[in-house]
Length: 112
Image (cartoon, rainbow, N blue to C red):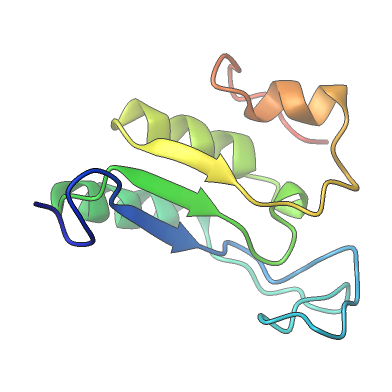
């Protein structure tokens, strides 16, 4: 059995607190004014560690994860080391281009 159960062992990360909305009920105090974000290199090292600890999934949220420039790379890396991935988004920035850049079939397409 893994750290959080026998089937789904998921770690949740928030690479940015920046968001395109200003929701009063936001649990992470995210918003357009927030600029801090985690580096892709540190997140990749973290994912290697959690995979070695028995986690098999990673959930990405935030802030608005679609604002995080390295989201395609982060998802691709997580999948390459065997992690299942999910993204929790408000969906307002989701379009065909962004969806293609983060889908499991993508080739690290930039979000620009």
